Length: 81
Image (cartoon, rainbow, N blue to C red; front, side):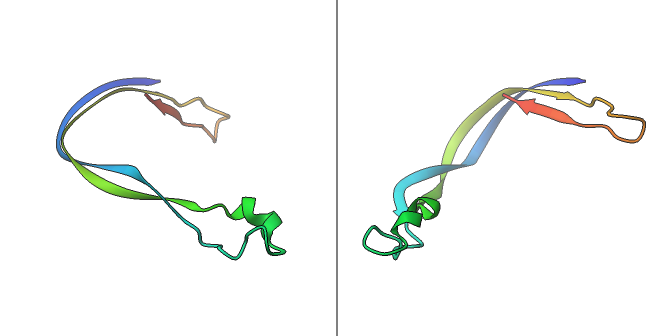
């Protein structure tokens, strides 16, 4: 297995954020139509955008294990916090 600790100082970091707006790609699916019952399956999408953060610090810990499944196959499992 592997364990990695990382710390990065980044300038001009691009971050994603939720704008608070929704876009409904299925406006015809409302309670007044026969499609109203299916509205839950076509919920409006949240709109995201990017913003520049002048300086950012990213610190974390990463684990990885590669257990053999048999003599021909192995799995790779990882987690980053």
